[in-house]
Each structure stands twice: as structure tokens, then as C-alpha cells.
Length: 171
Image (cartoon, rainbow, N blue to C red):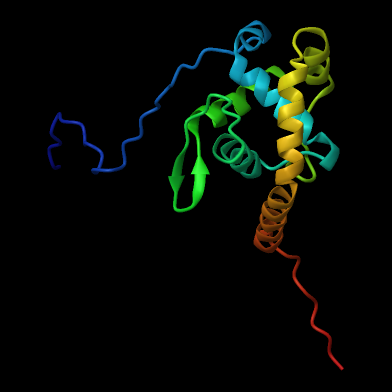
């Protein structure tokens, strides 16, 4: 019989897996009440609710255009990837609004929209009429650009969906 050594076999390099836990604090409605950026983001979502919501990528572009073209700085920093604006803070605020339940993603269209809780928050806790009028006017001016971007996103998601297998017809 062959002797076995007392050593354990080490796993082959690259097969080890580690669980990495990243702790993130939970967001509360009280924190949103104190955060002007998130409150103004709710006003932007309210301004686009008549068009059935907005895709997240379109929302990022809209807030970027508000800052650079309409001089409405909502407090977000942007950097460009190619010609597409990106903002980590804006993404985190969208996730926070989704987490608290003030915004939701439409399950069919995947567009962001205000929930009843979000509308109620704006009516009861905070509604800056002057800022909303500025945002609404700017959104109405930028509506053709938003619609074009939304159409592009819809087209790319439609084309990327897996299609059902087609039947062959034999004549």
C-alpha cells in the first residue's frame, strides 16, 4: 500500500471563491426628507410622469441636459463615457428612491415612475412650486430629445430580446 502524506491538497489556483460582503446603510424616508438632491429628483420624475415614466439612461441624460443646457443644477456630478453622461450619485439616488418605495420600475416597460407614496410625499412633506415650474418648462423643451433617446432604448431592448423559435413551413 502506498503511504499518503498528512498534507491536505491545496485547490488549484483560481478555484477559490470568497464571499465579499459590502455593508450599505438602509435608506429611510426621513433621510430623503433631508436630502435636496433626492427631493429634486422626485420633481423630475413628476415632470415626466405624463409620458408614462422614463428609462434610467434617459433620466441620467435629462438631468445632465438640465445642468448643462438649462442651468438647473440639481447637485449631481457627471462624467462622459464616449458621449453618454454617467453619474454614480444619480444612480445611487435612484436606487434609494426605489428602495424606499417613492419610485418604481414598470414591470412591462422597465421605465421609472413615481409611486403613490412618492406623490404623497411631494404633496405632504415637500413641494417646491418654483423649482417644479422651472423643471417642467425645461423638460417640455427637452421632450423631443428624451423621446428620441427613449425610442433608441426601446429599439435596442426589443432587438436584444430572445425571439421564439420560428416554425418552418413545408409546402
